[in-house]
Length: 79
Image 1 (cartoon, rainbow, N blue to C red):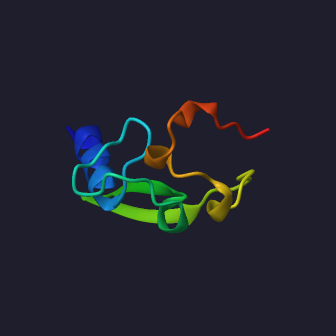
Image 2: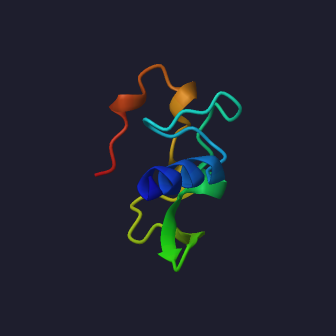
Image 3: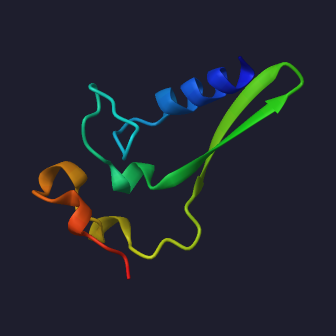
């Protein structure tokens, strides 16, 4: 159950939809605020969450098209 709680807390922290992580209250990707990793740690009996920038991102957030505004979101490549 610990892993389920960690995944759920991380999902609730992310205020956007991205790939298989879909939220009806935040239906779009938000690359300006959420192009980052969520780090989850268990220390003693506490679960902590922190965010870190994506290291080695090939595109700047302003250059990544919004997933839901594209007719074919899978046509975009990073290469």
